[in-house]
Image (cartoon, one colour):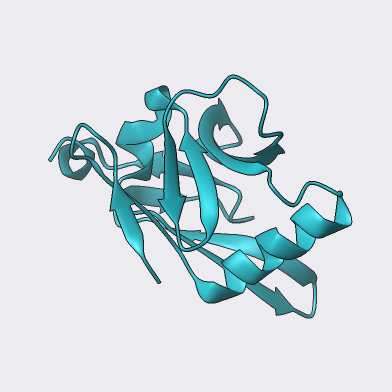
Length: 125
């Protein structure tokens, strides 16, 4: 697992081998092998915020592109403060497969695990 930092020295995300394998599978299934993983935090859910992952074509106008493992990643600048130290994993269980987000700055998760609230004290460091 490799991590990268944005140009403004904000520690960014980690992507596990399982998540990388699933992203690569999705890229091939969608016939977008060179697509860029866009990571964004949006308002929503019962706790205030949700993570959103999307594959964007190489030609789309995306600001800063980082390289994590063999994957091109774009993080929406407005999302930086919510994704510091974020670890993206993928696992399968009886309910199916899905991406799992582990963030030490999260104060609370909703019971469904889809939305979260940030600990503003830790996220400002």
